[in-house]
Image (cartoon, rainbow, N blue to C red; front, side):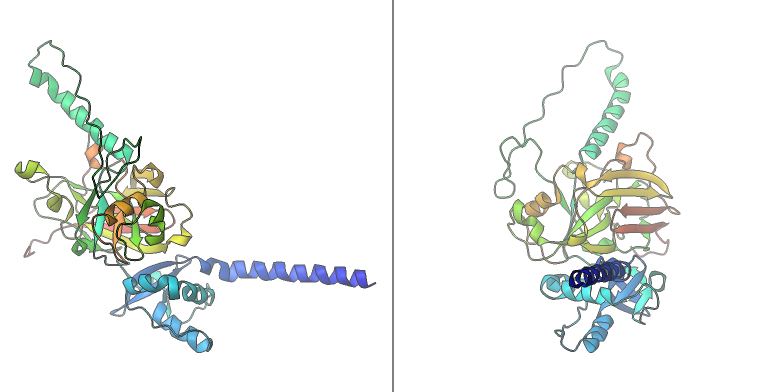
Length: 388
């Protein structure tokens, strides 16, 4: 008889546990995964917790409510911006945000929870240093080379004047060598060294903000990129430790002006003109903490122009991975919480197209990163009254 009662009790306990587990999964499990962003509502800017891709939780107000309901919980000073949250995330806010997330129901949420449609999405963070990778997708580099060869082949008959003489083989490219103190290559590594350039933080805009085509510029290109957000001060970081310095990931649209300088000064290359017009740095819409992206080197990202797919690739196609890029950057300059390294553009830009389709006023550009979200921006012409 005792064995029977024990067996029945065991079955009941197991059933209760399964039901409880199922309830947690349905009600609180989804809230365990969250995104973070910066939002504006009623003229007030706040750091928010994004739940279910539908709800924006005002972290400061939610934390006050949480501490009132949990008197024994540690008292935390709410972050006033994303950089503060990032700097204090590991020691304080990761656990607190997960606890807050569990308290937010999908329906009937408290007053400090807003629908996405009720807020303005701002850039999730304003980096002090915004670094972008150049030529970091093999497919992108190959596409540019193919298009350049296509143009050269078209021009060759006129240049040769109909002559029948053959040309010798192109000279072999010089082998890549290390950059002492910055990038030391391992034996057998034939890749070029990483390449990074600065994009001014002043050009950063958020989801929904307009990309402004500067007056007189007609070759405005798109580049949808997977970006890494720095979590703590990083200087001389070894590659095998780089993951420890990452806070999370976001999307970045590296808008580019391909029209050039109009002369050959300094070889004709001008990264200020090419990358740093106002509004040429959409970032967001959110940051996803790194624990929620299972494999950052296997993430799809897609660029749409007016709904048409222009780029469709995966971070696994990077030449140098995100940890190598972070290490390389940290060997040049100290990175701090909230700084951003964008991993470079995949194939599909207008530099690779025989029939380029440049962005122009009236377009809508959308950079979508798997697991992060879609960064969507209308394209407009610069106002005639601009004082620029």
